[in-house]
Image 1 (cartoon, rainbow, N blue to C red):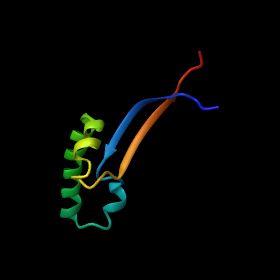
Image 2: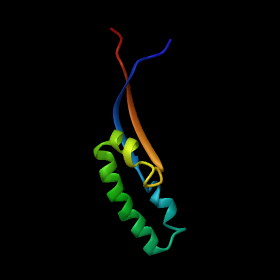
Image 3: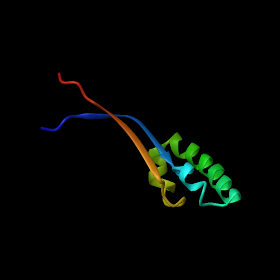
Length: 75
């Protein structure tokens, strides 16, 4: 039997796991990706639905998509 779940929180991250990338990217490239990611994340998280429908493919997708659900209580 399935349970009903409610979406409580969601977040998109364009430049995910920066702590892992720091050692493999040059300093300038890392910081430019971090700043670009912060700008993209800000606008994407204002309206994730609008982002996924209109400009998701323009930025090459997102590396992390975090969702938190809550199990609905039985009546």
